[in-house]
Image 1 (cartoon, rainbow, N blue to C red):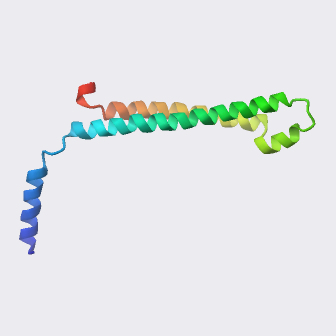
Image 2 (image 1 turned 180 degrees about the vertical axis):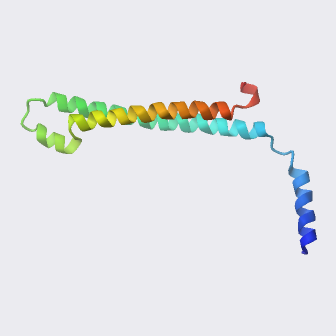
Length: 112
C-alpha cells in the first residue's frame, strides 16, 4: 500500500476505535490489579515477618544451650534477625502507603 492509504486506514481505525475504552475502564482494571497485587505482596511480607519471629523464638529457646552457635550459623544472630524484621516492617509500611496513593490515583468514578 502507498503511504496515504496507510495513513487513511490508520485514521479510519483510530476514529472507529477511539470510543471503545474509556479512562474509567482503564482505572477500574488498574485498581483491581493494585488491590490484588497489594494483597499478594502484603501476604508475602507477613510470611517473612512470621518466619523471622519463629527464628527469633528458636534462638531464645536455646539461650543457654551449647548448640546455639550451630543454630545461629543456620538462622543468623538475634541482631541480624531483628534488623531483618525492621526492614520487612519498613517495606510493608512503604508498600501500604504506595498502594494507597496509586489506588487513589486510579480510582474508578463509581468508587469516588
